[in-house]
Length: 305
Image 1: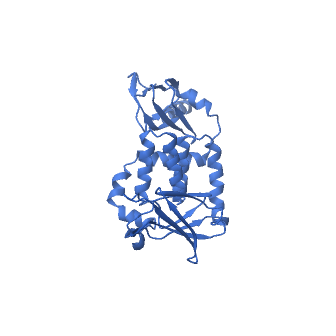
Image 2 (image 1 turned 120 degrees about the vertical axis):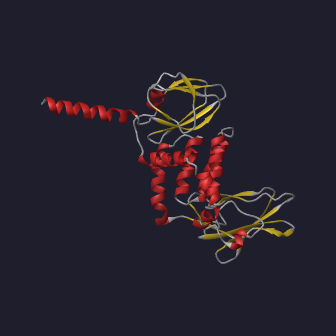
Image 3 (image 1 turned 45 degrees about the horizontal axis):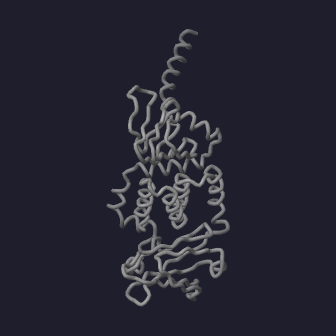
């Protein structure tokens, strides 16, 4: 019996340190002179870094005009903007006990993308990334104007934000939409280098596929190639919509971190326009936090946009 108790005690001692290493939060975004006091050692207050893990007994100190974005192990997020001290255990308690494997999965994708050194690999293998995403088509690559999207893309949401290169000296752009039969269904002159298409409204609502291009008004030499947009519906959309519903239930707040996780969800499902819109919303909600702009830049490089 004594031998059994000794063995059990030894096993508990082995397991306990491992359990203690499981993090409560990870720091996904950080701005300002924020610090952390790690409970496991007595070094006092240390500068906090993006990618750091936080455990229950750690304490955060948010300085004036600063920001910290945290991702919980459950996938839920917390944004801290008010000056003061915060115990990690209190922040975790406010989130409740509900867990979402879907939210946790995509939160981990965000963490991996934000803390990896993929930037260098993407630059070195830019051609390969273009090939994978289907963006390599001579008509698109050789055109003077590039749209910020693959040459052929599916869209899940009701809206599609289309951006293209801003041409210096261009007063107006002519944006054209055709259906799959090469019939023009919309022509619009624009002063800016973007347009928001409402895909569930006329003249797009009855179209299975639309073809878009843009040119500078009055200059036939400045034009884009043709880009295809297909609305993802029916049985193809059902599994993605089901997972999106589960994810959205954990990301109810309109926050930069939640938009970043949603952007990653769409990117992982190869829905690049939906992803782009959420990356841009993340930046709009926290324009002075550099990590969100960096995430957008990495997304663009990964996908050859």
